[in-house]
Image (tube, rainbow, N blue to C red; front, top):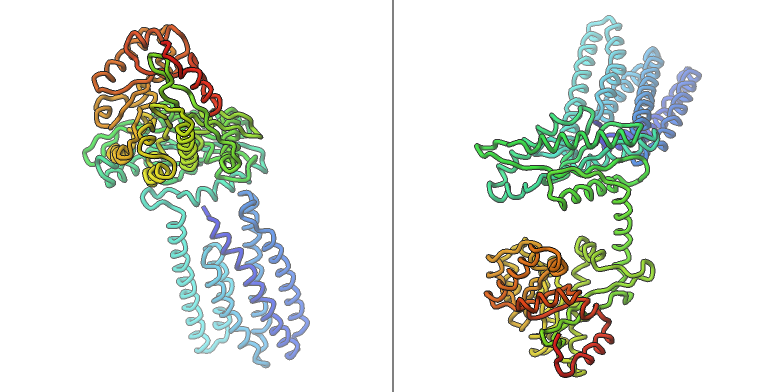
Length: 623
């Protein structure tokens, strides 16, 4: 397939050819006037002007970004005929002047033919369909002319002309091969020889333009290999590279011939399919091919005597002319692919309208979140934590966002978006500073808590500047006594990161007196091995287990096990999500120390929390 640079190169040559024809053409017109052949020369120059006007129109009509494949090919055909017409006119001026030997114009004609041939060899080298016939068109009449002289030197000149023809063809062909090699390297992946991301986006843009004209549909499949990183890490990149080549071989066997497949990078591949007039037929074809690929790609691979087993997650998107940006469809397929990842990998998911609506909403949240901090829309609410005597011993700071445009947005909606976009680092710093200021203000007002809990996201915790930022905020707002009241809540997903680095950061912060709690314990990577390695002070039982205490014997057993485990490891334990007296009674009977939930209080704004604390700060009355 011809890429954008091919068409751009050809596009630029149009003006060059017009310039090399109009200006020198005036000289030939003047020579014709001097030597009595003005009328035919004038007619010839009028034809040059007409073809130049045609070329100028072709030049202005070219817009690779918006042209469909059909329009682009139509433009290329017209451009081909334009170039043939130009060089045909230069052959005509040769035939006109070569017979004027009495006025020595035949020398001008010979030079003209050789010069035009050199120009064709240089400017048209990118396209064999142009330079080969053009060089023959110009040089063959010259060879014949020399033969017709009938003298020995004519035969010699004819031989020289034939040799020059071969040299010009050889030169143009060599240049063509270099251009094709450079083009291949620029548009193909070196490891797999598939098209690369840059070329694929150009191709997809053209497909979208074509689909916009025809009203048809096509599909886009984004394929990500599951656990490929494990192969690279355990067996090395050489084995990983050979595995990728084996995967590509299977892809090419499984997909229809008219599909275009490219490697986006790493272990991600992308495919576009045929055109369909019916959207449902297009969706069904995409799902059928995807299911076939899922089955085919997870058959065992043998690489360097290693038997390897991998699967694939495939996101599918229907492409049409409804959108002007090719990256939009790739993003849709990417979102669908991550939906497969979230559901356990090794499957297919089709991007749909519900997902599209969710994505649009997420994009709006992402856009508004950039301004939420500076506009003061992000606040903290505080949920009380109580001990067995009913005394408020702590508070968990929970972020809230009220947008003037979207209203109240729950943290479960905007926190994942902040995580994905990296805004969580800035948001997390704001939460830390606001929380630290609140803790200082409460201390100064006589509101003494045993602990003050703040949630730390995985991306925030693993940020290179996190520990230094916390140290700076502690120095600015707290003292050693208040710093020891801080409880940073981390989730079990942090164990999926570099656990050694996580431990180093935790130990660094513990020198400030900061303690750590494992939030949502029991829902993720719960393991005694990491629980024993991490310098934790507290475990929080996930609300899902607490809410099911009266319903599910298995959840009751899980809560009892967690409570016993915390006792063995000498960790404090907080049950969150306590909503009923039955749940509280069970937790009290099994030795739970601290409680948090709507049974006591929902998260409160700062002033309301202060009032709640005052109402609970009297003589302990029990729960």
